[in-house]
Image 1 (spheres, rainbow, N blue to C red):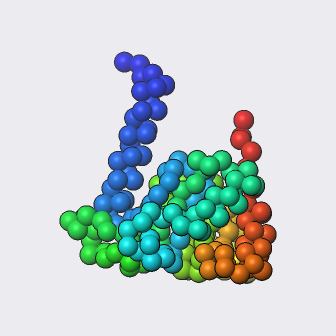
Image 2 (cartoon, rainbow, N blue to C red; image 1 turned 30 degrees about the horizontal axis):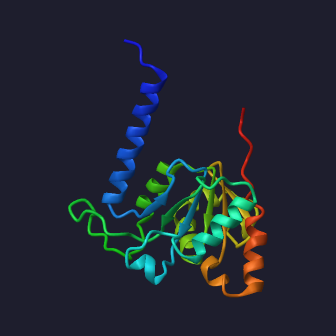
Length: 195
């Protein structure tokens, strides 16, 4: 029996949706387009996000959407992943409580499920978690500062480009810091289509 292209696409989308729902049930907090080529990782949530508002629904999300749009990412090209747990299903969360840093294996599973071409780490907590999770891949990066995810440097991690920012949300209130973040983000242009 032949399977049509449409049936195959629907099956792949259903499988991806099921995988993401399973991650959310285990406490992984995500928002946006799961098929996005860029994933923003936020480790230091603001008060509104901690109390249940969607990730990047405040001024930081507005600024990031504008900045990424200015360098060529489409508005739908935005997915955010929290480095800390949300409220998952207690039956499957494995004792993980809301606000707790995600275990490295769960964080890695979530990032690999999203499978972006680029990852932007919005704060030090996100950079620390990625550094610990992908220590093996970062160990082969020749430049020490790049391997340590120094802010502003793009690190190659398993075929992905990773850019660390050291406190995007906090930088919004300081013009000089805001300009520094903009300079860092301008390096993360979308790649052209491979066809």
